[in-house]
Image (cartoon, rainbow over all chains, first blue to last red; front, side, top):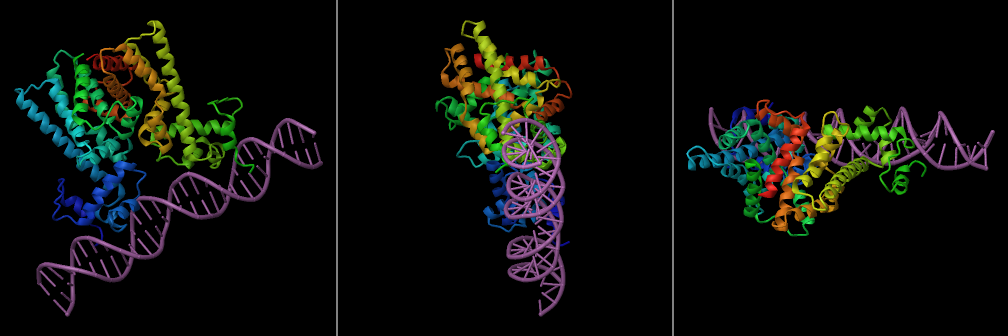
Length: 226
Length: 226
DNA sequence: TCCCGTCTCAAACGTTTGTTCGGGACAGAC
DNA sequence: GTCTGTCCCGAACAAACGTTTGAGACGGGA
């Protein structure tokens, strides 16, 4: 019973506490390496051996520190989505403060689009995290999809804010348009940008994040105000 | 050398010819069963044994008729995307004829959205095919992604038509907005609808395809005309 | 010094995977 | 009848997979 700290760790650290100081260097190395490989190559195309080999740790480290491969995947998923939702909520809160509790559509969309888009900047550390989150939406474990299906608490405030900003629209209509706007984000994958690049004969460039953000907000705002 | 018809078949039937009469019943059974299982459970989560067991054929049938599991996947992908592109091109052509070669944005978007959306109707046979195609975009083989990245010939006519309908817009802008509109389609997955359903407390219903189509076109048209 | 909890290690386990093999059934041509 | 090509079958193969095991290294507290 001495060689199973994964379950004890789960019970102890209820909150998402990283504590880089105290945490074992091996566990952190597995975490970041796994996130990168999963994001780049897909969940099923990366084996535990690939992770541990690239991280320079022992094969058994994954099961020792995380319990299983799926549990490792789920922990990365939980931490990154929590960070993203926190940042989005922070921006929405600021927008609400700036507008006496009634932010306009444009600022609500900015709070929704800007965090993942800014993180997608090639210079940004979290570029990989965004790709991981997007991938989880289609390739995720059943546990992940269960969360994605049922846990919509982070979207409630955005839906309510949009309903408040569009009082003339039926609530049903607002939900659908939020659904469409979210789809625009999930389409921000490597392959989709490559297709766009090929279609436009190199006219479109991915690098300019601020311009892309403005384009997305313009498009979605017009859709909401239609 | 007698037991390898897969390669000879590839050379012989250059075009996508099904010929249900002449084609072996086993091959057709493998094809439709594989498509359904792949679409429902994901490419990597379905084994050759799952397919052959459910289809009621021998395990070796996949390799005998298609060469390999990946080749089977690719053949399904090629046939279904070809059918989808053909239907879209047909609708765009009709819209062009109706408008003296200059169809408006709304009809172009209808040609883009309507085929996959109408096929997604629960009553429609091709519901599975649409899910397969959507899945190929994120879980596909490297061969599929290569096609998705480079082969954009089917989108050329849509991009040109949109540029013609929006002469005041910069070409670059049109390409980006087409990219956004396509993202709205790819978001039409089971899990995404479930999330929308949970978020709206059951206010939104998936079943009504015509209403959804109108909503999507309204949203995207406003984005293009912004 | 001894003990104990934490962590790492090489090695192996059992399962599942895609693929291949040889044989045989069946039908049409000669 | 004999041959030939097509197709199906059970059986096996080698590889890769996630996971488990038992032992050992290390360090702080008694």
